[in-house]
Length: 123
Image (cartoon, rainbow, N blue to C red; front, side):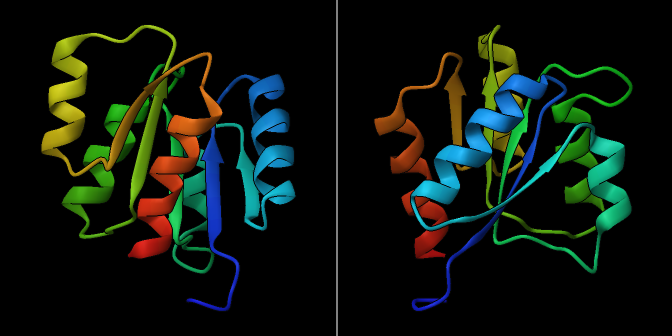
C-alpha cells in the first residue's frame, strides 16, 4: 500500500460533512468514497472494502456504533476513525473496545484527522 493512495470510506448523514471530508481527503492524495448511511456502506461490501473508515457516531437507522459492532461481529477489520458532535465517555470507551483507532470531535481539527489517517496509512 506504500505506493497506492489509501481508500477511505466516509459515512455521515450530513451531506456538507461528506462533501467537505471527501474534498479534503482527495486534496491530500486519498481515494475517498462518501456514503450517506451505514446501510449504503454495508451494501457496497465486500467488493468495495476500504483501507480505512471515517464514521459518524450519530446517524439515523443505524448508528456508527451499531455499524462498528456489526463489522466486528462479522470479522470485518477496517481501521476506523469515529467522529461525533456529541462526545461522551461511554461512547468513546465502546468505540475503543471495538477497535476504533481514533475518536474525534466535530468540528474536526485537520491535525487530529491527519494524525489518525497516518495510522490508517501505517496499517
